[in-house]
Length: 265
Image (tube, rainbow, N blue to C red; front, top):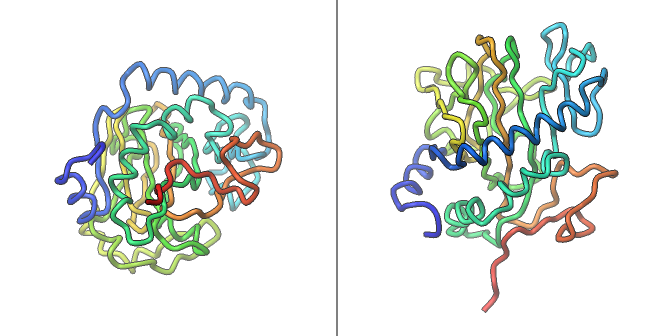
């Protein structure tokens, strides 16, 4: 193992998720936060979604249900590694890739660690809930092998809308999703098994793309930020590449970005 212990890997395989506190130092968190703030300021006058920048809706609806944005109040930056340079240091660095290799390396289809997608998630005061879902529902054209990493930039608590998860739910496979933004009907879920997963600033939450999870409305008076990256064990194209972004030199014409590849004997 390069990063994780056997016990941590067993926990991930059993529950489908794992929390590692203090994955980023306070200094690293501060650098990431400053870079996100800089990029956010650059789009503070935006009145419509564009190039992966999605804004909160003034009417409390989801961003797929309304175009009535709260000017400059970000909900999400999709393709975040292409917009926020410091995220490359976090998501493409050896420490993170060692964790992914530890978790993916035993998979029978493993060909390496490949970039899949990334985002910054903002949950301002009053920010809406994200219903129950599985990340794999958004990527049905690919086998559900992806692993998501979720890093708290601010303390994620029950009050400000931390992630809730259902342990072991990744073992049930992909569940039917409904609506435009995709969610699982609560009647299909045993909500008695749902537990909050608070994560302190700098902490890392790793979860399988089939784990059922959600987040509540932010009931606090402060914005909660998190940064997210998804990885694949197969050379599938990234799902969040925009035509006018500068691609990393390692990304090929199919938008496949290998971060670690299996060395053939």
